[in-house]
Length: 234
Image (cartoon, rainbow, N blue to C red; front, side, top):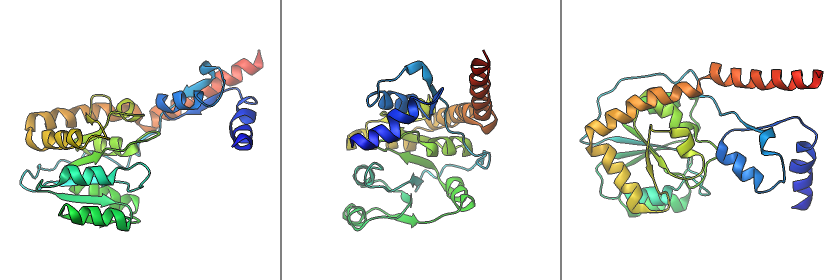
């Protein structure tokens, strides 16, 4: 562990003019491991692909398609989301390979689901367009790009109130406690049952995603490079 810390963190960070990270949450996490000038750690967010654009679709209130992107047992929280969805009439659309344990839990709660693996960007966009909402209740994310992809397409989002997710979502998502099944279920039901609230989230999502367009993020990198170059010329 010491050698990894030395080679991956301390040595590189003490030879560079700046370090970029993809979220403020990541910056704070990095500072727990290294004694480093916080002003030299620059937050520049990930950008959302311009491929994801608004697509209007009537909300299916009778049997909504609830999209889940990611299945990692480390952080994607499939087990708690499955419990939260139990008894809700919906189609749970899961992107990513499910483990045998996850499949057993989904079966235990009797959830109607679809599972898609290895999708191209085009096929993933189709799933966003067909979805009625996104559930992204991860226990950990360095960023959380699916939040923005759903924002861009025009789908309401339920996501976690931990790590980087509130930072990425802004006011464009219903925030829940990913460790509390009751909280996750309440957030899902609020989006499913409250039409005005859904509409507010979608409208806020369109505003929110503009902060993360590729031209905005590229310009932030360009400004950083210009600043470093100017400082080295002095």
